Image (cartoon, rainbow, N blue to C red; front, side, top):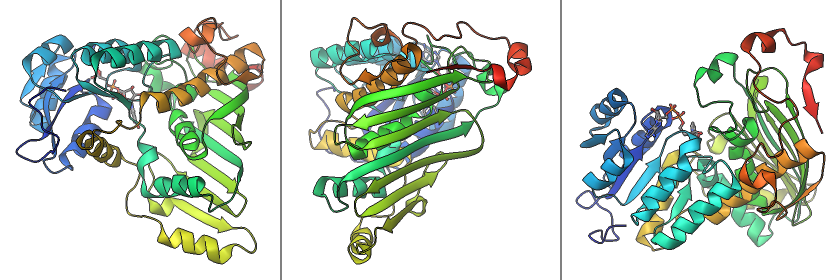
Length: 391
Ligand SMILES: NC(=O)c1ccc[n+]([C@@H]2O[C@H](COP(=O)([O-])OP(=O)(O)OC[C@H]3O[C@@H](n4cnc5c(N)ncnc54)[C@H](O)[C@@H]3O)[C@@H](O)[C@H]2O)c1
């Protein structure tokens, strides 16, 4: 962070944001920065597509626009850079920014592999600025409430959970060149879509210890999987069923936590409000659970806004920027564990994917059994029974 910045952000002294990649999600960032009412301002943007960056500048009143990241960093004073670029660029761009002592907020996934994330961690340590990952579902009021209740034990012991990302993406979704490829997107729905639900689940229930999984490429014209199922055992003994799918016409994002004294459910699609959460008490615990639920915070949903506010607060308080690299690593390691289990047929222990494992360097690891990319016509004619499934 540049020395001229003081820790209190106001309209006169806003937190200065640079945006890299001015495509779809960048507009969500711009809209939510605007809602911060002057505490933060986008002062520069960069995209390899000159027309796109110009359009972004005009739409969001951004004074500086470039087609090159280094040029952006040279031409404007920044406190943080939001990486809204394709996943395969996050590592290289994060390191370039961190080397300048500027914070980074990367869109998910923060990197393509654990190896890449560890390289970012080295740059973070060397440069003095921090690397944070967007995981906006951690920040809604009820998610904060649930994490506090797990910490104070008010709902009793967590025993089991369900973590489903049942989404639908037609073949045309994969026309965008970086989608559905190991070397640019990093994986299929496990990496690119279910990451939100898995990250929220781990943020509530704590770290995982073992995973066993199955992956399949059923239908989509992708090199990666389009479906995984996993059974994850957590350090606290709870067992979680996880499904990540892009094949599900009736879409839902569903998290269910069964504690000793209550079931807590979250059902939504791409973002939740307070109304997306429900609680059901176990017999005998109705009053205590209803009382705890009624006292909880409310009013804030899962959008980027709450995380941006949390980041501003953290910078002002000189605290770690959420979601920290360490927190994001637990989720990325679970994703690597799911692929490793599915592609090797083994049960994977947390901590076992080290530099000697092919799954450390790439989520594809030792290779998906279905090999390379199908053509669209192959995918369309392939009968359902011939889907490539691996345990
Ligand atoms: N948090 C969420 O809910 C959420 C939702 C959607 C996407 N995302 C993530 O956001 C990221 C971007 O996704 P998107 O849907 O906005 O993609 P997009 O393709 O719409 O936008 C990416 C932009 O990056 C630009 N770009 C490519 N190479 C570049 C480079 N070298 N330097 C600068 N810009 C470059 C492209 O020209 C494009 O404008 C991905 O990591 C994706 O997973 C997160």
